[in-house]
Length: 267
Image (cartoon, rainbow, N blue to C red):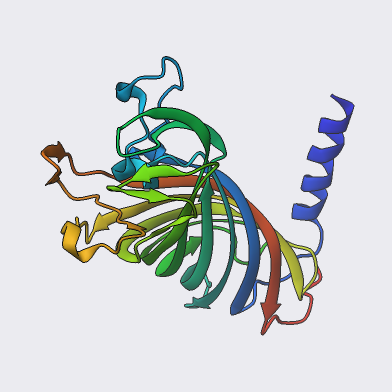
């Protein structure tokens, strides 16, 4: 309780003492941790009992991830007399992964076995949007924003032994087919201005990854060692798959760098 009171006192002092006016241009370097959501969080089936109904289907590989780690950078340009409104241009490299066991077919006889399975889906996002800063002339500046993102998919899927996927024996990693989707990013956080040039930022991002551009490749368009995203409703090998909504949420923290900051304004 004592530590919490000290923290509140520290924040009050920061907000009350001589303030720095927020600069015209803010640059952030951030790192974050989070989780896939929606259909992107499809779990790997149980390994017991050893049955076909629990087999990890190749068409679901992109949806067997569990955790998200990302790194990003953005620039925010303030405009207007008060500087509340800002244009944001940023990029983020998102790494979705899992490290688990799964049931696979291991030969042309469709025999089953349990082996290690490491699905990895990477999404490089470039986004442009707007933001509203609530206290642009304060040391503590909360903000909310939204933007459109171009999302570029890649990845690979590793197995602990030889398995049979898409009609062939696989001993090495399979690649995720390159895909592009247009998404929406909702962002909110707090920028702490520690000096006229450097600060810290913390926040949360909710990313709707594929509301625009869903697709499902014809099997003839997918390479022999590739797995496609297949997020549009489609039929494959006599099975019908519903459209899928892919999203994620993550917290982040990082450094702020201010450019064009005026001199300190003392009360």
